[in-house]
Length: 194
Image (cartoon, rainbow, N blue to C red; front, side, top):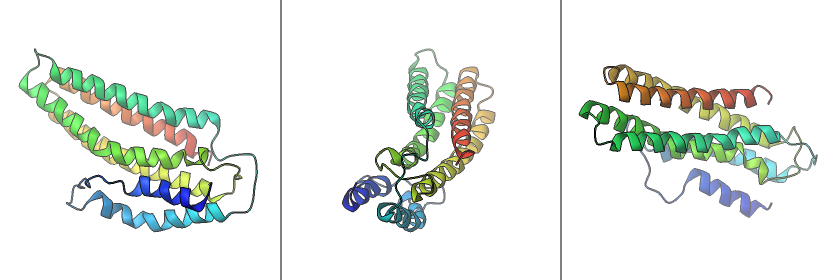
């Protein structure tokens, strides 16, 4: 893989042409990402320039399958939430809580997919040994993902508490929390071996 291809991948992860989402304090996600772009770019550059070649990779096939399982879990959860919000017999309180749960999850979905891409970047950059810089990129992406998930879990617990008097919505927020916990556990099981 050439330097140009790596920079194109970096551009997909960091930028994209989309309108920036806003973080809770009003700063754009793009500005928040700038703080980690330089170290990441340096790591990828080192990866491209690395000379050590080995057949073993940072992640096992089992690790890749765990990461790839996250997206269908998220899609199933979102589909279920949207269907529940559209039910004709749903109360206003349930609908509001479920819509808030959907909004919370959508807020983090783009950023999480960027980190998922970084975690699995090794598939596109082949023949680097266990001591390659890609290991640092994967560790970084897992740590950042876990930070995002921990913050999202905190917000969902607060939402769940507010929605506890609406049985349907409470159940759906619990499903969202279960997704967060499952994803965190999957990533932690990979991180302990890095």
